[in-house]
Image 1 (tube, rainbow, N blue to C red):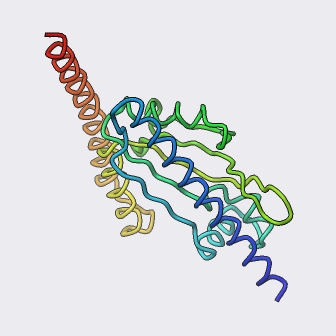
Image 2 (image 1 turned 30 degrees about the vertical axis):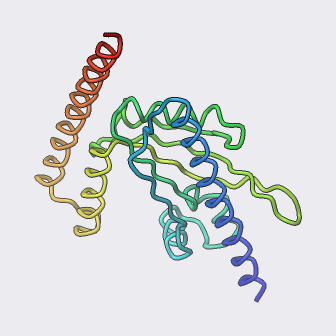
Length: 208
């Protein structure tokens, strides 16, 4: 019963952290849009990792499945994915979060500049979110992934392939995905240049 109570308390804390994170991100985006007349985000997805998924992750890392180990070793129980149109938008979002007083960044990984060997690209922020409970303020860890639409498409397909082959991906499929990742990166750069060109044309017309 004590373990059940501890798990309920943990889930409550993570749920509160997710709601807090969603609220703060939405406020930042609304403020940015109001000031710049532009919304850099296409859509946002959020999720709370299940107890079963957390348990499997602990086992894969060689840890005993306990409430304390979930808090200590599972860093993405709370997850937010922010999908943008252009590469430049990704870094705008990173800057917004870095300048936020409500979200504390403790680690970041730029897999766009330095993609993983698989071809995976995204910008990851590990953050702490304040959760106000009866016994005080708890800083809860969360992961924010920021990527373009093209990167999100690739990552979604890669996830399905990993699941289908249970991690043992055939060499030709793996190489094909790596080539696709390169194509997507080049596409993102071309779309960014096109967007810059459109902005220049728009500004020239406004001047006239």
